[in-house]
Structure formats: C-alpha cells, structure tokens
Image: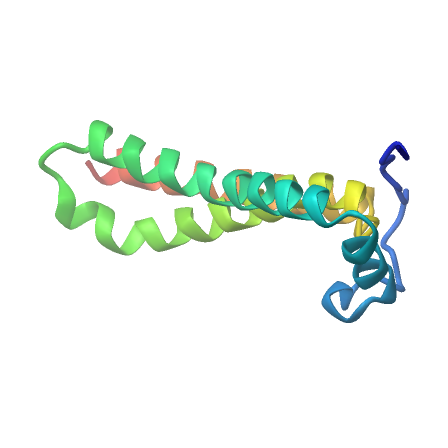
Length: 126
C-alpha cells in the first residue's frame, strides 16, 4: 500500500489554479478512489463548518435583534466561505491540488477579517 503524502507550494501554484481541469487530480482519483471520497467529505465538512458556527453564533448573540443581523450576515458568510476555502486548500494538498501557502493564508486571514468586521458592526449597532 502506497502512503499518500501532501504536496505543498510556498507561493501561488500557477499550474493548479484551474484544479478541476488538472490531470493530476484525475490521475489521483483513479489511483486512490476511496481516499478521494474521504478527502472530499473532510473538505466539504471543513468548508461548511465555519458557516454553521457563524450562523449559530449570530442566533445566540443576537436573540431578538434579527433586523440588525440581516444585511451584515452576508459579509460574515463571505468570510466563512473564504475560511472554508483556506481549510479545504490544506486538505487539497493531500490530493495534489494545493494552491500554495500564500493562497491559504490570504483566504483564512481575509475570511477572519470579514467575520471580525461583521461582529464589530453588529455590536456597534446593537
């Protein structure tokens, strides 16, 4: 049995920006079909988990102030999607479709910034 090892790039990967068209992914899926399914499940879980936690925290923190949260929730959800992409990119390294350290850092930091701005504006207006 062959060990699955991640492939990391320090900068932006020029050849994997269109990873869904990549030959590496197709050969990887043919070589490791069960691992591909497991990594896809983990990737979707890490993609959706920040959004679920964000919506839950908004429900808990703003019990009766739903009218304030509506427009601002979109900004926070965009941040959650960016964080999910960053976490999914880490898992993508095991599938040999990693976008690079810089892309991961940019996704996670930009997403965290959007979420912090959302929380700040909610508590500013609440």
